[in-house]
Image (tube, rainbow, N blue to C red; front, side):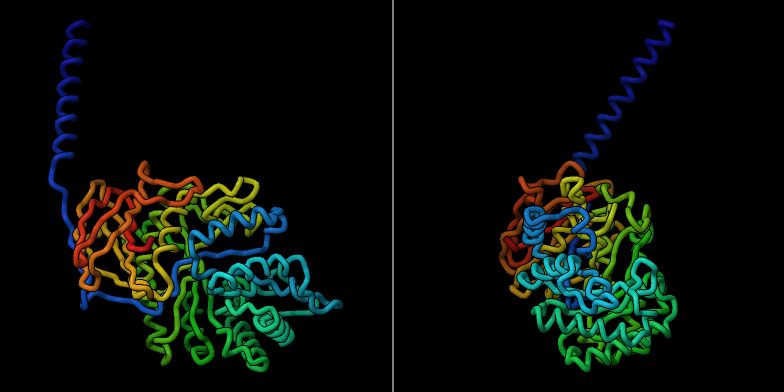
Length: 461
């Protein structure tokens, strides 16, 4: 037994020495370097809508989100400088059979609070009427989505919101959330689209609010049919996509999105002036209607950053995460922060998605350079104010050097934010703080991109 113990100890020491030697060699070895070039040959995307989120007022009343609570939410939105949101509308908030229009209903008052913020802060709104066919959305006196009375009510509330209340922030109107599920019949939904368009035209709204759609989820034939039938009246296109993590990780999402955006370019003569927006985005792994089991994990923030970059590489003009916060719907766990019952606690993925929202400005010229690595992602943005922002994702288990050479950028002082377990820095309000500062000389700068991280670098203060 003594000899066995002696040999065991000796063997253990040898293993320990070898392990330490390997770690030292790894730590001291020269890092792999990737060159990222931005020049006249780099793929670009214009008409950028920005990154945003779904922000619904539906359950704010039930959670008792009061004035003080809303001030906290406004502070977070102010920090984000969010450029675009999608907001739920329900016809039964505005109309009751036997009563008529109810613009002062509690649900409408709650909606106005959201729209007030958007109007005051130059936030584009995609207003979506959730429909009237599911049991929980039914409106007494209305039948199906092709009911002409339904279209009249929609045009009347849009007229009230835009002209009477002054909510010119409403940029798009979408008829029915995920109509392939909620309606299930393209012909009936299409008749509803025509009815709404005619009623909006009668009210003089078609030059003020653009119809968009189809808003489908997992039914690309609806997108194709919508482009075929309604490119003459749609001012933009939307679709939803909850994607598998492996699909994103293997960079297959680019071609999926490209197929949808290419179809718009092929069939719509006015495609250059129209945006294609993914108006609900999230991870399919762990998904249910109410929650995503991965929402509190660090990896969710990596996933959403990668999702966004690939969406733009596929030709999408914007991505809206589902969703902003958990107060919007009962017992939800999808938000950048939790609901009032859970003290509005900020989740980890607020860091990465918040940086994308804040620093990749609406109407930026987006640059999508080639990385020459299956484990590296990148994009860059030149803002309307000639500021620059960059995003980098490293899936490798080791750090790498990044050399950036941007022909269009001069000398800049840059902030570097690192989204990586153990390296995230936040201030007293839970907002991201920069980890480092970098100087560029004539558009050139070099930095270390940590293993398994997302990094945002920006010239915006």
